Length: 103
Image (tube, rainbow, N blue to C red; front, side):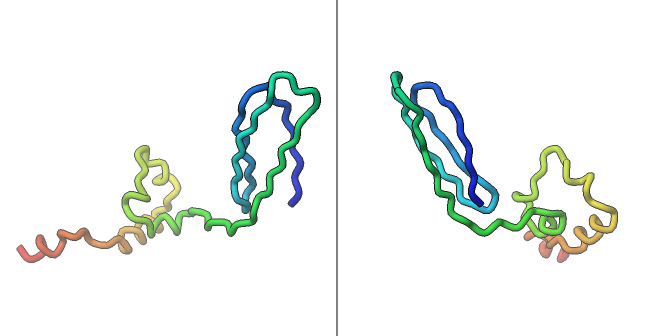
């Protein structure tokens, strides 16, 4: 809940980002002059945000084809045979399906 972190930075301009799971991400631009005599301090206040549900195998089954796009087919290794059968049953037919079934 309360976190302390320190980092020594060289003179110049730096972008510092603070983040934690369940909290918002905060980004600050910090300028450190070349001849600083003592250490400076930058504080961040992260606001609590609801965690997004994790994407698991069951959630992936209900995603559209764009969201489900896996160019290296890495997710296939995680599907069991039973899950693959359920996916095939649950998938909607393409928009052009009725046309070809009437021929």
